[in-house]
Image (tube, rainbow, N blue to C red; front, side, top):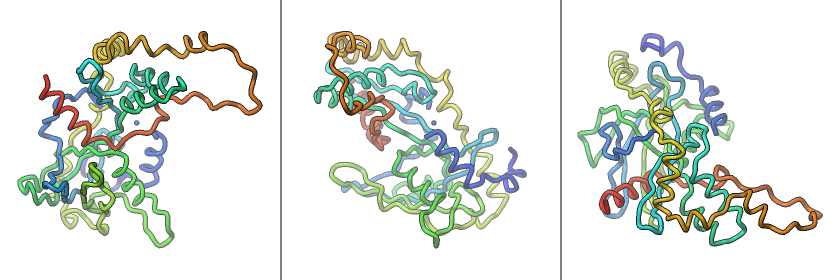
Length: 302
């Protein structure tokens, strides 16, 4: 869609909400110093502040965000596993399958292993940096911003308000969107975004269409984050997982079929037992900052 058609064909809030609910879902980008990606700066106390404006979908793309999962953990071999999950593109993933077996083994120790290896959810959007007190040179840049479920929930809250006196807002809209005030605190050793909030709706650059078109032309395509060609194959990931965990650890986690064969049949209980939990049903962390930290550690140890 060209900029000239954008104003008359803006994404409806209902369409964005439906898309978010439907996917309930990038790429093999292992360069954690990607110049396109903006990261907030925090002080020694772990506090940070910036103002961003989330931007509409780039030309040729349907949604202004994309989401993907990855895994980041250190195995007993001392090696790191930092890879995107094939579940991002609807395919089976070896870590997810292993985690499902561990979780359903009935052993607390195995559940702890699965928790340590669980997938982490990431969203990616285009954003305009409106304020960045710690790095003012970023102001005016169109960047990629990665975040987790907590910030996405705040986006959903303004698109789908809970109370009658609140008006639905499409935060990705040039003309009727709203700036996002990112407020970061350190709480119990983790970054906390609870105080982040949207400002009142307003036109970006007061609706100056020349400036808006310039921003629109600088949007980064998001399709690469879910392009299958940017993902390693199942076999490659399985081999990497075996190296990281060690053959003994892999052998110590039998498949669900093997477990069924080993288990002695028991009488049918009066109440139906819980269905096995899949890796996709396990809780996911808001792990963008954690993944960056893991990647840094892995690079330092390489």
